[in-house]
Image 1 (cartoon, rainbow, N blue to C red):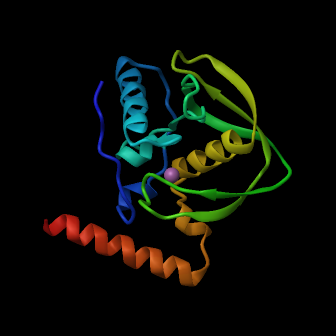
Image 2 (image 1 turned 45 degrees about the horizontal axis):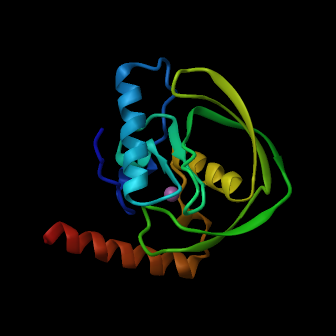
Length: 171
Ligand code: NI
């Protein structure tokens, strides 16, 4: 396993769309293992493949609370098939260091996806797990948390992270 580099906004690769995974190959399993390791090392509650520059439709989530046993969930080719209610959550994102935003999401969802063996499953989720799944699924569509912000905050966040990227590039 290996920890991969997490791309930060405004890296353009974050706008790529995750392509459908046709077969669970050893490379895909390796990618999933690396994504899990990278997420735990960050640490974060979710990570999409597009966040490490691999544009395929996979994300991993673990919303277990601190001190609780880890509960890694792998979603390959995920689709949300039902949405219900509304909840506003204060979200963060590993690609937006130190940025938070209140985002409206469905409170309850039903998602269909394949697991790391290619088996299809359905999962009902609510609260943090539902929010995390909706957030990660957007990553696979090239949609980012900044897209949910109003024009003023969007400008501030863009400027801040552009500056950060410039500093890293020249360091
Ligand atoms: Ni994110």
